[in-house]
Length: 527
Image (cartoon, rainbow, N blue to C red; front, side, top):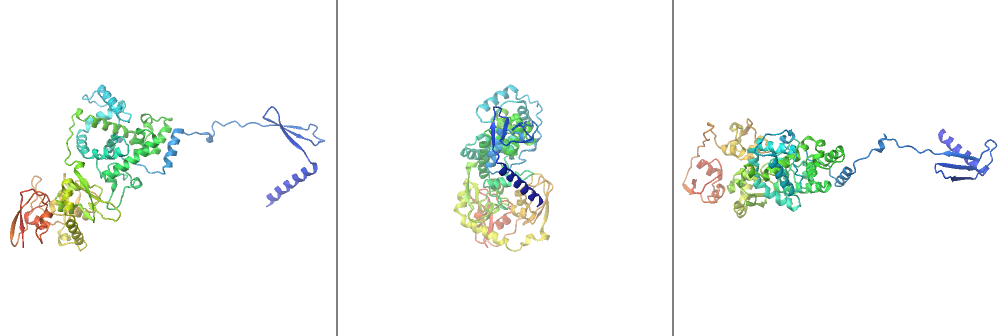
């Protein structure tokens, strides 16, 4: 309060002084712009000279001032463009362990000379938008893969015959280079249900938030990050945005792996360089090996036959499958029983259904992918198949059946070569039941893992060379012999005989699986 009173008093005094003396002040600039002349018209008895010269001194710029730091303009524009997209999610930890452990040391592999490699890389560079230039690091990765990963590469080549036509169709729709298909090899080894330690999932390794942003449904039943078609479409859109920002496919791939922020930081730390190979040493370790791994796989796949690899036709080609939109909840087990299609094949074709259950939700288009020769059979009998599925679900609403009581359970220890479909056939139960009893969220098993199973049938463990034996259930009443026809399944046969279930046929004939062969003779009780 006192301070305010002091200020007001000063202003009052100044105002009074000016009014009494009626000063007239003029300010003139002389030739030297740094000097201001103030002329006072009033005579002063003390100061004879009426001219006051004030020297203005310019402030010198401090070379150490923090306010004077400048950013790299190109990298800054990248950041601005990216933030305009309002996108902050990144894809993490999506490369194989081998990618992070690349040491780029020379590899002795006389089957591929440096001159031959240089010539092939130059040819590859001419037909792709990527910078496929020779350098010793890339040569090291290529020779290391050819020398130490031949079996894995051969398996990937065979598997790629199913996935690559699918990828190419989606990439072409979005004007993405078709060579991007090789990225899925580095990301997931073409495993639709691949999951990294940080939760990136699917062929293209999307994080949860990223998948949601690109329209991939993720719920307790469904994870469309594992859907080959939908995840490829999302990856194409994501890569298209990255390329629009960076204007370079090498940098777009690096951003796909580590996030655009890490790439722009690497550009800054490298002094503004924009070539991947010039900023690589400033990228995270896994991303530094990302592009070499991608280019190495591209080279090996493009010159596979020259290196002695075989290109086999897949057991089932993508174009030999089709989809059917489901009309009610149904499980892959039920589809397997109704159509005679092996459960493993259905799981391979429908990897996005976590629990092997296809839900039915209004306004959602959940589809079942089937081999083309099974689609007609399913559509032609879908009312009966859905009725069968509903009856199965209705049963599950009741208490656990007799075979599921605690005193009937067995503990099975997983051995080398085991998988859920195989174990389910041993005990005459469903894969979905084994998963439910053991709280399994995926089909992955570990050797030595213990599973709780409530068997429908007795299982006799024998030596590794012998098979489990199941005693047929005695048949009562009139017995007929049914000869299996082409296209028959256990479900379709059971529909021909009122009161006969699939399990009845299995029990009467000692069948543990669902496969039937034309000409096979089955015993059927008619009463």
